[in-house]
Length: 288
Image 1 (cartoon, rainbow, N blue to C red):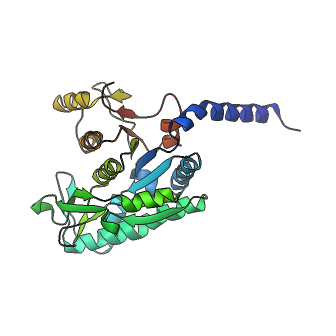
Image 2: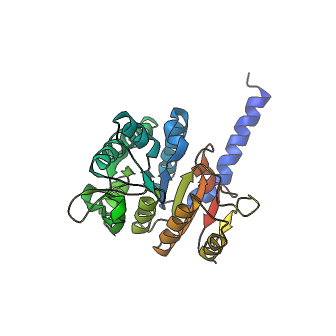
Image 3: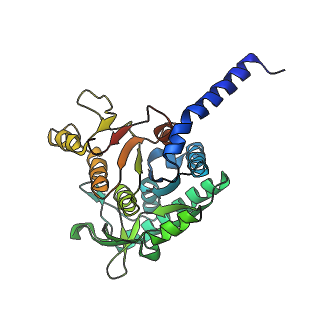
């Protein structure tokens, strides 16, 4: 016999699905770019949970595009190879030896791990980097940073072909320089540029914090670009949040309808943001 508790759980699950229906209809056919990074990448259970969320998004008609980082894995490999690495203004100085390791880790180890996790949950994912099909042509970000790139020209035609075939692109943040050299690109920056090139409906920046906070530490659930600039000027937005909000502003200026900064450690964070009324994290968009 089925217990009353089990029946109650199933009823709650059915209610959740019916409540999600309007949001599923809202995002049917929409392109959503997800920047995946942080501690969740190194945890097998969190990786599997993220992969299931991505597959479910594809199943209900969303076009997800995953862009990933891999800083901790790069650091681990550099240490194993006894290659010293330093940072300037939070960005890794990337010499010739370092960029080889970066490409090996991002395009090889990390990228294929995510692809396999999505495929294991029943999805169809394909791994690539910004170098493939000239997706991301970059200029050198700053001479003192070495092989670090800033996206300059985007060609999303390959991504559009994959999405039309219901394949989930998983992209390592590497770009091609003007002379064919490999350039390391900040993961958030790459995700923002890719989202803008696709005219994405949403850019989700998964982080290890719950969102943009006010001076009292409360998460601000909805912000405009002007409010972001004001909070940054006042020093409320500071440190590691600045690059993320800068990415959000650039993406919105490039045509992305909204950007959400949310905690990727929270279970089903992407689904909560897209398919529930309250969402998750901090939503940034133009004033309505």
